Amino acid sequence: MLPFDHALFLSLNADPGTPAFVVAAAKWLSLGLPSCLFGTMIGALAFATRPVRRDLLVTIAGIALAAMIAYVIRQHWPSLRPAQLGWGIQWLEHGARAGFPSMHATQAFALAQGLLFAPHVRRMTRGLPVIATAWLCAFGIAWSRVCLGVHTPSDVIGGAATGIVAACLIAAAARQLLRRGPMFNGRGRSSAYSSRPALP
Image (cartoon, rainbow, N blue to C red; front, top):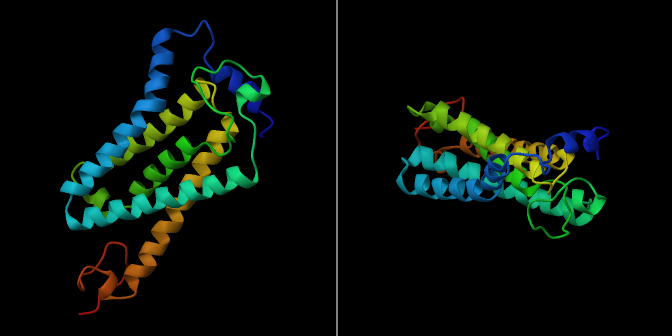
């Protein structure tokens, strides 16, 4: 837990005086937006070109790795949630599972960082707006978890770090695989992940 956790949590956590629309927006960001992002990824996989689909699969692998790392941390180094600490108001029903790192923040930031490292997504006509939107969604989800009282600021900061690091590791692994030759590189074509042309 970070030294500023309590003060920052209380400044972000919704209280009885918080406008109802703010609480409603936080609930949608926390509960509805992740489902929308998941559905969008599935749709993109179904209709994207092969290079973009490969980028998306690498991004999904980063999300999966991030979730596994977060799960291991929670199991071995459990931390209390705000309600268990007697902090603020909890606006969502939630179990007593370990709070660090936030799984929502972990996966949201893994998605954003994965898309940022996706070369074919960046080259799409709307690639940069898509990536920017993913980052805005990640920050929105992280804020909502604190606003609703289910996570401390350090939980979501830890989740963001976990997601970003996992996405970086998977992107680096993908680049290494694609540098090894045609069998990893789309039938011998050059790859945006690699700085060298593929072998003929």
